[in-house]
Image (cartoon, rainbow, N blue to C red):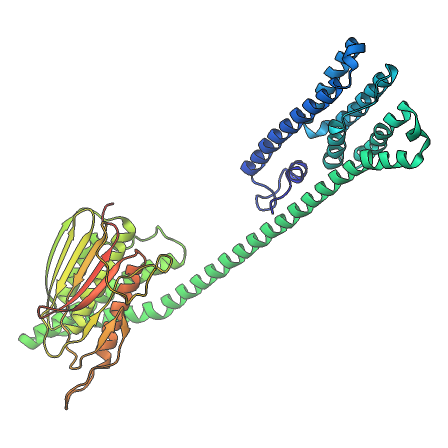
Length: 478
């Protein structure tokens, strides 16, 4: 339930310095004021029309047109005053009572039936109970009772001699509208107080959660810095020292030097990525830029330095930042898998035509194959079918990454959507290589998860003697 408008308007002036969580925002308060103004104008117009018509139909204009015209103007003016600010509720109530008594006196003096419209009088009683508080609200009660009992008392007759009818008129015409206004205002204020407490509780929960997340990120950052960074730095230092200590020539020495150089380079790159992640964990999001396709040359150089013969072709415009980072990470994972599980060569082609990016990497297969296939990756919020359902055609704007890499495991396993399936039957003397299949599974699962963030597609398997992986993501135009 939304807080009552009068509760908001009455509460806000007493809390000028209240926090946004403890009171209505400025935009909401202005909207409430506009809504109340429209409602007040509508009530005022309707009350003025009804009271004026009832007074005109009483026949008073035929016998006393002058006084009747003056009272009619007063009736319309008093009813239109309902559109005035709430602070005028007491004055409007007193004026309504005075006009009611004047109409009764005028009709009774000219011998006409005393028929007084009660719309404006009842609305005035309601407004006095709803808008006023304290002594000013209580003072209006006897005034309203006088207005309710004045008509039967002035007109005389049986109602004047029957105290029960007078009591009924006083309660129904004077007290009940005021009580309804008080109840409505109190209920609105109570609801507003509950909503204020709820807003404060939600704000406190958010603050506590943010503080806990910040503390946890800082703890993780400290652990990463104290443990992992030390070991990675030590690896790089020792690799560099070993490379400098090598003497002599020959193929073995050259290979060892090349491997140590790759270890040293990779350790430096790992330290750069580690520091970048530490900055992110500490909340310094602008302290280091996330790698993207602009850094693809450095990635390719490191992979080549590790011994992979890689042919790379790139073309196309710049990608959106978030997609650029995702494509880089996917390519990084694919090249890492090719380096770990391949046999020394690979081909990589990156193309961006503005509606999609296509990245193709291929390795010729040797030995028995590991066949892995998958279906489109759909974010959980938009998924309409299981991940292992039939593949659908590619959408328009997409990133397209078909990849193939050499599999060297001697056993054949099948995966779908990154999930492992039972092993096929193997001939005698063959053995599964769980380390290799697990590594492939983890790498492809990471690619699939990144693709899910963009509602992308992942397909992989064996084609034309090559191991292929296809990833397609929405986007491509920055």
